[in-house]
Amino acid sequence: MSEIKNQPHALVTGGAGFIGSHLVDLLLGKDWEVTVLDNFDPFYDPILKRENISQHLSSPSYTLIEGDIRDQELIDQLGEFDVIVHLAAKAGVRPSILNPTEYQDVNVKGTQNMLEFARKRQIKQFVFASSSSVYGISPNVPWREADAVLQPISPYASTKVSGELLGHVYSHLYGIRFVGLRFFTVFGPRQRPDLAIHKFAEKMIHKQPIPVFGDGSTRRDYTFVGDIVQGIEKAMHFEDNNYQIFNLANGNPVYLTDMIHFLEEELNVKAIIDRQPEQPGDVPQTVADIHLAEKLLGYKPETSFKEGVKKFSEWKKCHQ
Image (cartoon, rainbow, N blue to C red; front, side):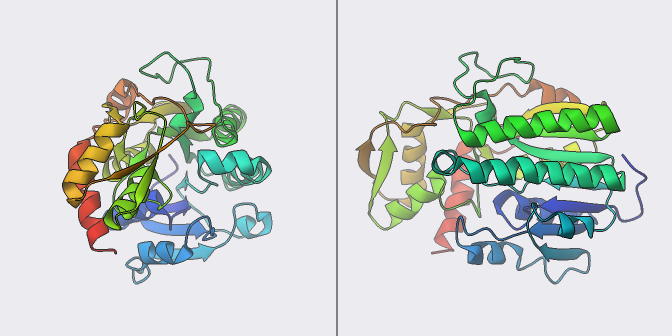
């Protein structure tokens, strides 16, 4: 990593979002200076993102820049940083199928812009938010970073593969240390309202049917947001080599039917199931091997799915 000052400075793109705002909580608590670049994309209500960062605005170590990662002129005016954590992206598997061109533009061109910025400013450390969706329908579970053949099945997933490959190019040509983190179904307080746990909770609280695609046998490696941001912070200090991909997950996949059951318990309501056909782009399972992150990052997920659902439910009850 570049020379660390008394107060190291991180640029966090997408830092007003779900994961980003939790990361900023952690970094400000560890005496980092943090600059956030976020365009408050209306994919979901920007007011929620304003709430995410409301406590950050009073910190003298926090700077918010409202702008788009596709705006090269804006990016060129940014300052000096020790590390870039690039979380900003168009999110969502199903929406990407409806609008693949914009996903390509934001997620690939935007990542290219941030890598170019790192090259020009000689910022050594670049942490990239990838996704478990890059594995797609690969049957070789649990999924390992060394799996050579990825099988993405959505435009969103393909943009994340592209981001990882761009990182390899910039690492090879310019010596940027690129750490790609494949997040596995992150959940917890402040979770995006379009994601299953939050969407289901909202409907269950209001006694509305919840859409269940398929027979409920899909399973996801749900990962609590607190564990994810601990992994990101460790990746910000990773120095073993110049290009590395890690799975960040819990390592214990949960069936959809069990997820609904845990929500019923914590919210004290009975779910009304609206059975729907399987959706294009959805994968039947996500199962991570996290041994590499444990070995090289010291990553250790500490929050069980049940405990995470309890924390999410407590937050949700206070944000109705």
